[in-house]
Image (cartoon, rainbow, N blue to C red; front, side):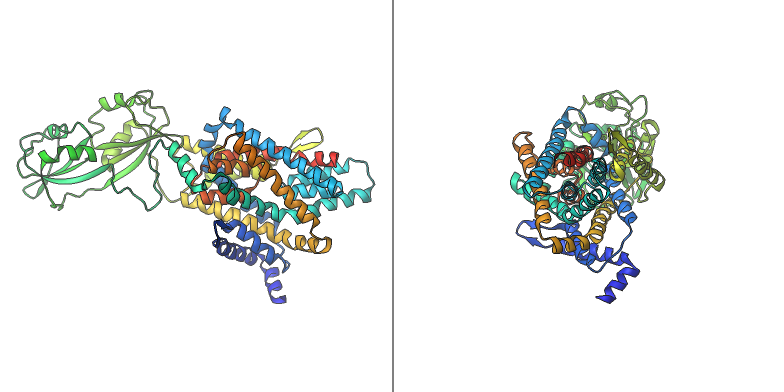
Length: 561
């Protein structure tokens, strides 16, 4: 014990990484359909390790949480801003319902158990995982006109109530939002997240890394010219009416020859044809025999995203673009069109807007030729733009320092709210100016996973020892009251959200519910279960509102208890 205590005193970071490692291990165990998850596992292990007297700097917690919440906002910026408006009314109501039910639960429990104003406020702050309540409640207690000793005692009770209830405040929200909600909805988080993502993609499949279609839309085939001998390249390419095809290479008498639209194909020429599967199937009977003669015929085909900015392409339909500049488009295939994070159907009537991103397939030289007219190619690399994101996080933290006073009540986004806001804004800007602000998916995933699990582990290391000692000295009453304050508002809000607000997608509902409770650890587990960013947009809306609504509970509890 003494040796372990000495090690943690010399290097508390060891306790942090042990909590992350063993927390992830514990989180993998399943009990029926229940799984603790890595975040909740880190919290449990960190509370155990805190009993060795770990002292860890509060700044580490702030940095880790800022990284997590900024990365979440950055990924979801375009989707968040497109979801604002009348569509976000449900999220506003949900956040208000949770705040009101939480207030009522705290007041009722305080009167039943004869709690003082400080203890009741601390329980609210911990059980609702809204640390700002500590500040607003303490400030309200200061203004009661009580003696200095009574005021100090009440304010110390705020800290005690917070320390005892915060651990289950985090863990209970994870259990309810990640495990109970899918059981209640009778639909899985992953199942509904995929469904919602498919709606955003307009039926297109979004493949994970390492996945590809067994039936690719675009294929390459090698033929020995038969019936098409005597026709020009242009005439052969026009044979297919069902899907576009292009001749990319011609070999005659064992040598690659120059290619042009007027080149006349001779018998036994070897042709490399690239095109849409439907088009190649349509003409294969007239092409001749398919051959395995690949010597000199293989070519590198690239898939690139191009930002549409050329004036001659903006505000025109797809049909108009296809009919014009056929030479420019030779050998280039349009795969999909996206606006923000939403896929746009590639229909003849679809109107192209400035800033739309078209994904094209073809030879690099053909794509470069097209890009010179259409717009810049989005550079794909594995490096993170630290200038862009460093400024983004700094700007968010700066915004979080701002305080708006509503009478005597200070309202602030705080570091977390500020980093989330800047992440949303910088992510939205990145979606419209894709040449800057690169952050690979792997880098974003690391920020989210390490940031949230590390934040929760630091919380456990800091408050776990005090919480256990307080429970041992004062009994379980404060803990049990905190458990009720954690669970009851979430259950009531869950029922209202399902049967009155008519949430029918588990992933979206879980994101909104965790945000309304400002339950960041629960949200992290929801993202992990969902496997995509679908829950983020509703979370961002309700989380921003919860920072205001729940903060206001501090002085209200002091006034009504």
